[in-house]
Image (cartoon, rainbow, N blue to C red; front, side):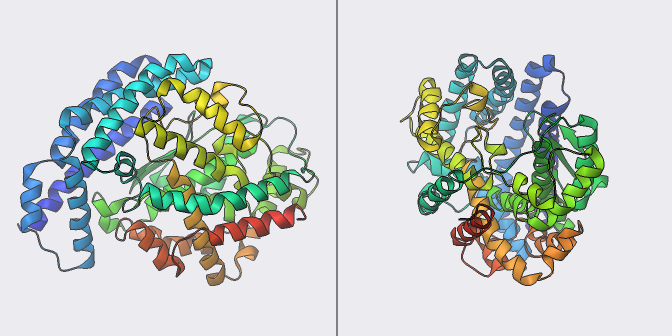
Length: 489
């Protein structure tokens, strides 16, 4: 055995254990008994201790020193293993274990506080999470920017300054478009009630329509929709609302985008650093292009209108054009995951600024609710009515995902670049989508983005696929054209 082969064998075992940890997280979010939360926290802490020990094993450094690779794939494997190793050894094992234990317990406390509309019940454990992640960020940064060090977990080779520059370029045009659209009459939405079982049956059909392989996946319900796993076990969740079926359908399409990315990676990369999506920004580019540019297009919504009519009968929408307008209706709301395309990124920018302030200690956890409510009122022009519509709406901070939120808008930016290239590559796209056929679009994304997994750096993935340097202009032009037409601007 060579050093490279020894390293890769060790890495595959580590990746397999990480997948098991992910499955424990999936179980906790879907079917775990509520009373098991404390035990699950200990289980998650135990497996994190094992993973940290393996990722910081001195033998990894020895193998890296002696390993050689002549292929592009082998060199990329070494690059990513080295990056992970160098980050892991900076974090003390007891800190990694404490983070796993506290965030596992915090998730359950967040869910209960959200249900009870009780911010005060959640703040003590959130203070623990924030303190631990600050400590971790400081260990990783080694005198550099703490928040940048955390962003690296989700969007490698990207800084908060780079992200902030993109957001600064986007914000004025988004604010102007939002104001112009909301000044116009709003189209009608759906009315009536929608049977939960019928929603779940149609959502399964939607998942398959967008290429999700149910032989290697499943669809379940959770408080907060998510995708989990890679390779041959990739699971998604959605949620239902009796009066808002779009919540279920578009959450599903969104998560299918994530899942198809993982299912589409070259099987040769399974259980290696290249066997997962390269970053959350690229991941989000897939979920958002599935959900929005494809799923909310005039062509596809015509097909979905016919499916919903067959399933639910009359639901208050007269025809396909009215349905397209309803699906893309810009309206006031509190929830990021339910926000329209025009306003979604403004929700993300709010969180980006608040979590940067939390990590720098410019904002204290005890002041988070007031800071959130003040910023929301300033950005959206109305007050938050209850905590579940405010600072308790997202699961991310309870599980310690600081640095994750900006990748949602980076994903939108990347999706804008990819969609421009996709439309040029598939001129018959609208005709296909009108028949519920997404195969050309999803096939193009699989070929140009998904199959590569972690082979290329995030921005390189988008540059290679789209033929352009990633930037916000294609997204902004798409939004202004789409909603300008819809609202007669």
